Length: 120
Image (cartoon, rainbow, N blue to C red; front, side):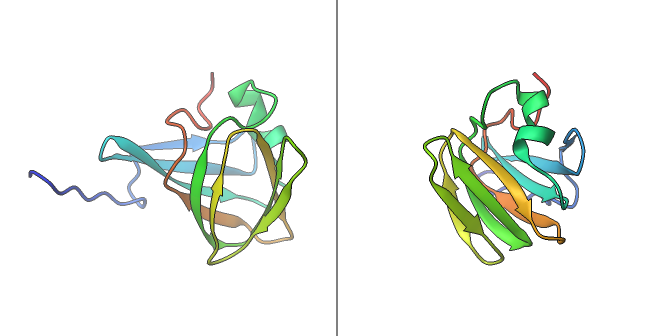
């Protein structure tokens, strides 16, 4: 089928569990990667993905849409933001992130590195 492709995050090509407290469901489409991340309360990138990535901070770019929950993001330069339901965010490499509150944060990311949350 030329010029059109449809995939569902409910039937991902791959599921990448974090060290604990969530997972990323990945579909490969159009030469790129789309990811639905479920980040459970208590999740923090520096604790639950850093051991997989083996970098000091997250080096994946993100272009995401938040479906539920809240997430804090701190850039390596100290800039901080908070993302919540309905927000669209672009996050450059060089950051940490964490779930705020008692609700899981679920977000669809249209811009992650293909290797996000893959053991290195």
